[in-house]
Amino acid sequence: MELRRTMLFIPGNSPAMLQSGGLFGADAVILDLEDTVAPGEKDAARQLVVQALHHVDYSGSERVVRINPLDTVGAADIASVVSGRPDALLVPKVESAADILQAAALVEAAEAPGQGPVKLVALLETPRGLAAAGVIAEAHPRLTALALGAEDYTAALGAVRTKEGREIYTARTLVVNAAAAAGIQSFDTPFTDAGDEEGLLADTRLARMLGFKGKLAVHPRQIEPIHSVFNPTAGEIAWAERVLDALRQAEEEGSGIASLGGKMVDAPVAQRARQVLQLARRLGLATS
Amino acid sequence: MVQVLRPAQAGTLESGDIFIQIAPAAAGSGLAIELESLVLAQYGQAIRATLAAVAAAQGVQDLVVRAVDRGALDWTIQARMLTALSRAGVALKGGTP
Image (tube, rainbow over all chains, first blue to last red; front, top):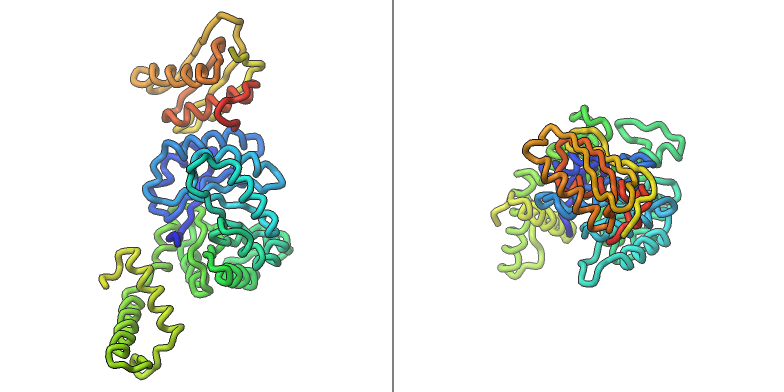
């Protein structure tokens, strides 16, 4: 699975920002054709994003394009940007499995022969989308993740949007569970106050605690704090190594039961330890 | 030969961008480019060459172009020129924007 601790939005009609998008170390960049592009500039942004995909080096960041909703100009976006060979498309305002099937069919029709399959990420940001999270997550093999968009969602509910985020607790857990049930990733809504690092850290800690695999970012300065939360700590890595050592030792001794510090190492503990070490190795943080 | 049907513009005056205005020209008049750029001495020829190449690739021969460059890279110039041509009524080859 892709490492996607951060997915950084880049306005699709800004040449300077498209050019510099790969400099910040985000795991993925989202070249945006939707909310950051004025209605009269959608055509210009499409051209710019296609050219950027062909010519700009995003330094190892996964290249994602957020298209417009399929009931507006999303189909035209797909017809254009797939030629730039993005890694994935972020499909906004997904409300049903049919939306994903439609996007997948349009992408397939737009792909050149031999082109690797463009993946899909579904942005759930309406009450209908959240209500259908489970079937959306299972809709198509191209779908590799669900992401939560809380601003549109809370506006539709008439809820008060707060930094603490109690109003989106249910939505968050719905997205994480639906994605996990389908074996795909989940990404948390962006923290929109780019000047509040403490708030961002608290919000990201909550996202990680709930099981999200990463967080959308609206400003380059958010990348490092988000990574710091999603990266396993030295203590977590050391614990995970001890767990796996205990399992190895139990196996060598022919014992079916491993224990660590007087506590039994059961299957969920072993799984958690393996996940920590897998991520740590990927980030170059673990030696074993 | 492809005809430009109406005046059109694309791009902005922001740093890293280029603002392009185009207008139809009489048949046989060729390509006329008026270019303003802070780096005219260093890159003026290259910018003109890119504008001309995009027009030629779309089959447009007669055209008036006025461009104000703010340090745009080649890929931006190509994108903005393609957008201007599309907005001017040219059905783009190789996919539409």
